[in-house]
Length: 408
Image (cartoon, rainbow, N blue to C red; front, top):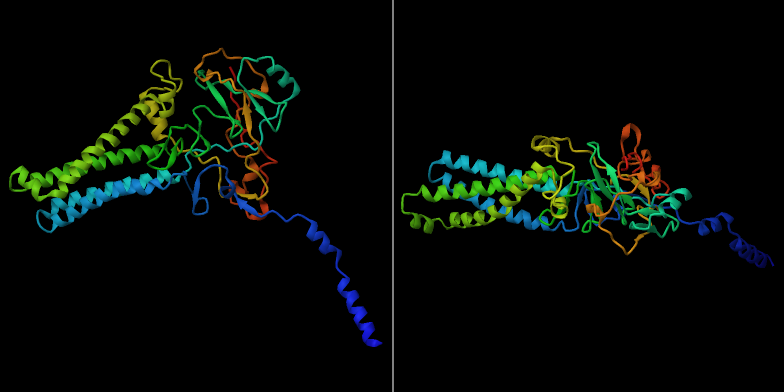
């Protein structure tokens, strides 16, 4: 009898459970905080916890480093051998010059490829508009419109005019991917899938976009590459001409110098021509994208300030800080970009000024591109908050409302 009672009591105890366990099972799991670079919508590759950012084709860095390093190492090895045989002081000086140029060249290559080129933070949702603004914009059917699936009542001009500080008028375009009006001279890179400030081009040799924040390093890279090619080319000729024999006999004895002469002669035409072209762009304050798309030789360049001021702006100006701290924390269920924008099938090329500009209300005066929300920053302006201070980007979509342009 006692055994039977014990069995019943044990069975009843096994059926008793805490109601809080049901609540925990039914409640959704807490979101795991992650850093922005771990959920970034672009095609970039990140290293060292988001401290270095590369393009999707960053593997091309190995090929570029090989094309620079192999002939440089061969030249330095040749100089080391010559030091032990003939005129050590002269050969030592040539060796030192080759080593310095090689280190500078590879260093500028790495700085160009591993830096944020000037990526513009994307919006999570399109800008909102009032009913009056929608009614006003609907009266201009000749424009190309942006229609958002998230906000079907929103109608915005795809391209609009803005007035620069110097009084010149330029056109800015709405980015369907990043859901913002790009700043002047910015463009969307289809390879990296980012809008980039002062976009120049996407360079396959460095595997990165060339923009506002890494253009000085890119100029330094191609300039040092040209200098290295010329240096190795001339020093290799000196190695041949300093031999006490005829030219053909000297070339037959020093095959390595002949190979370096041919290699550098071919490379100079490529990197040297590229360097000259970019110095021309600096003198006229153009980007590669603008040079091929807008052809400022046929019309006035609104950004040209004269040769000296152009050089000062491009090469001597302070590099602005990155607009995105990729190491900032964000909750896992937040989105950096929500929804797609659908543009009308008509694509009037009014970037080139083929139609008259129109006046638009305050909605279109907001150029959403510059600046983070203060919630990204911690004490003293620092970004690197602990995970428990994660924020929601989807609830704070306007990264870019700090600046406005005057609309023509």
